[in-house]
Image (cartoon, rainbow, N blue to C red; front, side):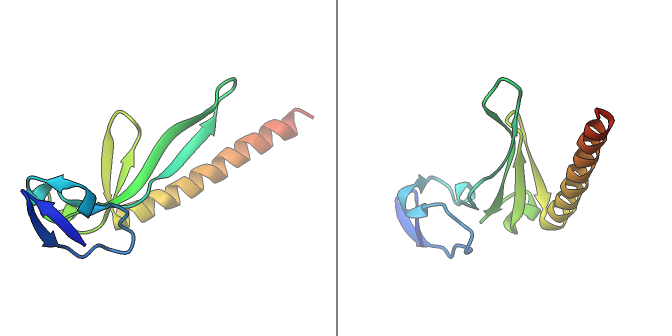
Length: 117
């Protein structure tokens, strides 16, 4: 896919997960070009409010970066105020922690329901 850098079209290969239309955006520097996936959202329904976005995640990869890990695919976690980068291995570990957390939440709500009877 072509990307325009300072008015010059350069061809770059996008990973299958990249959803950025590089041809539609122009950058001044190669360092500004990065691949990004769609976001996946973690929401919660708070009492009396519409669904609240707690966290979203997306894949990222830079063509050039001072942070070497960013030239390989990585996961961005964004809670609104700040974002954190995770290597793919760290992202898998985080996903395992989320599954364990979800199990603990179910145990808490089950205990509350059982205790309310």
